[in-house]
Length: 232
Image 1 (cartoon, helix red, strand yellow):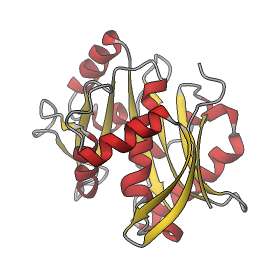
Image 2 (image 1 turned 135 degrees about the vertical axis):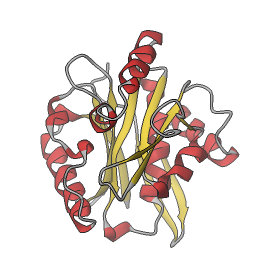
Image 3 (image 1 turned 90 degrees about the horizontal axis):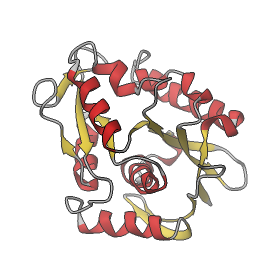
């Protein structure tokens, strides 16, 4: 059984370590070592919420993502990644902070053991949007690889064309492209697909549920425990 849970990063150091190791191994397969979302200072940040995918029985970690809220102590990974290319990212994040808070969905990965099940391309991003309802934020950012831009669009995010080259940057390497996407209002899911809107609202209304999910490799049961412990 696949179990998906959330927690504040400092509340479970052992799970954070498993997250870091799994993410690093995956990045190394693709020859990427300097991605900003893989830095480890977030493990001490109480404003970082970890989404963990694990085996219920063995506690093997199959993947995860983070929702990192902007604060004065830690820069968002997207700021560190593209700020040197376009300083307007700082102004945009400060603007959303003044409106009520913002965050970034980052560090999303899944292991090869669950490749093709839709966990990385569908479920984790969906959960990331769903749990923002529990946070003191009004917007969210995500820095997408070309293959995940469609994911952002499905969720209702828009390309932030005021930054870079119509939202595009060469990152994390000169031969790779990253796209800045933003959801201006986490409560407005009108741009999301009907299916994604339905699933996000379901997870927000019932954060504890068991669902038979369907991916490219067929159906599999998932238990969701998405109420963030010790928050606020």
